[in-house]
Image (cartoon, rainbow, N blue to C red; front, side, top):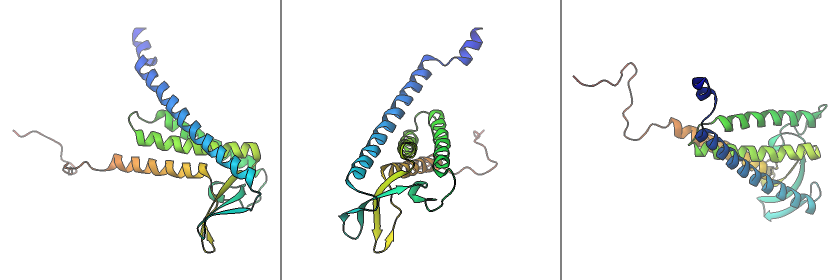
Length: 193
């Protein structure tokens, strides 16, 4: 019985570590979600859809856009049945996968955990819009002459930052350490006799 309990019951240190990870995850996600929703509320209260405020002439405007598609307006031009529900379900499935990965990722990988916090905060921000309004509020309009990048918001930016952090964390894990000699296939480390 003692062997079974020690195998199946996490020790106090492990559960305290999980509690701490969940706390920081929730705090970070909440901060990003609050910033995203505050900026969307501010812009939506000041502008009507399609209206712009010039921030940097010839480069950046605030333009209120109702995005019925995915990130950066993907699929917004398509009119399919139950589109809002489909977009919400796809977003929820992706969100569940990221939450699972966040809780299962190894301890000590700070950059990975930060990346996941940014992705989750952004995903929650856009899902909340979609569930509440049936569309996502986008407002950052970056352009050069007649070429516009699709409008985006704080949530989209957060997701991009998170993906960038995950890529950097992945590259750091696979980067050979300085001064280490490459191992030749088939050779093992053996002592000299």
